[in-house]
Length: 254
Image 1 (cartoon, helix red, strand yellow):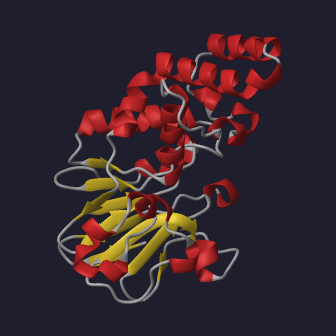
Image 2 (cartoon, rainbow, N blue to C red):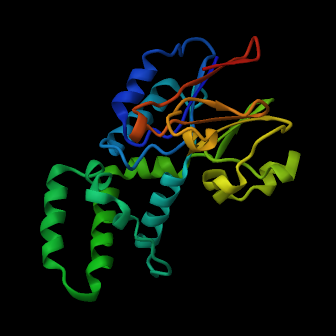
């Protein structure tokens, strides 16, 4: 059995409730499709839990992919810590109330950061606050950052592609080479894949309420052909859909 979940967004308790219902014995696998952070209250704890889960069960049983929220977060860390300061990504400005940042540092570091924020003035304010935040995250959660940087963009079986957002389907069986990384994690709604493809595609990223056209729908969406979408907008619905695939029968269960 293969289980898939996506877009946990820091709702660790809901994720744990789902895990209790899964059978991870024998050759059964769990594939997580990205977006573990932001929006919810326990981003850092969610990353740590998944990190520990994968180390407990092994990378072949707990497959962890990256999403656009991890991609943006890592890009922020890299651009802020780049010694030449070539580019700038102000991810921190979008972390409202420091909801994610505060879960990746200690309480003492957070208090220090808030004190530091009152001492910085002028044009250097944004740059120095970002630099301080990255410094603290790397000090306390450096192992998680290193792990995140090693997460793959997709996972494939003989008949399936598991990915956060999607692939370049026009490339057909060359999709692995024709899909840029930003599409794996951020394929937009306007070009979302539907219909027949030579492999099944299981993705998150875009709310199934939006794909289905029903604002009250937050379950697994199947287009009737080759695509399954599983982003249940947990911040609204309180639901993280689970898609199961029975490898013996070739049937999906949800």
